[in-house]
Image (cartoon, rainbow, N blue to C red; front, side):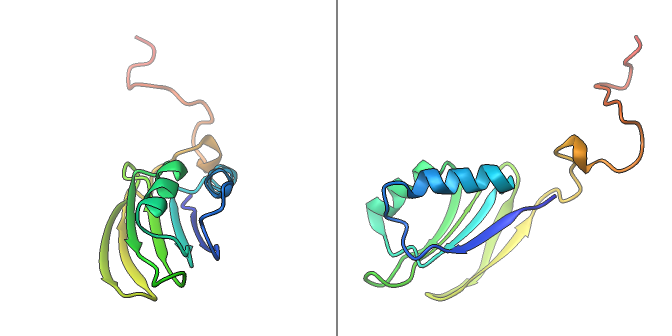
Length: 122
C-alpha cells in the first residue's frame, strides 16, 4: 500500500509541528509528505524538516511569510525526480517498488505462513 500525505499546513513553525507530523506519518504509515504553505524558510525550515525524520526533500522556499512547499520522503522507498516546479507547484516523478509487500495484511491469497529462505526444512 502506498500512502502519500498532502496537507495545507498553513505554517510549520510551531513548536509541536514536527511531533504532529511524526504522529500523522505513524498513523497512516506514510513515507512521502507534501506540506503546503509552510511559511518558514532557511535554517529554521531546515531544522523543522530534520525533526520530521525523512531523509530526502525538495523545497520551494516561501516568499516572505507566504507560500512554501516541502516534499519530504524516505529515500529507501522512493526515487524522486522533480520534473517542474515554481512557487505554486511541484511536479515530481516518483519511482519505487510499488509491488512490494511491506506488511502481512497486504498479502492476498497464498500461504498465511511466512517462511524465510528457500530451504526452510534443511
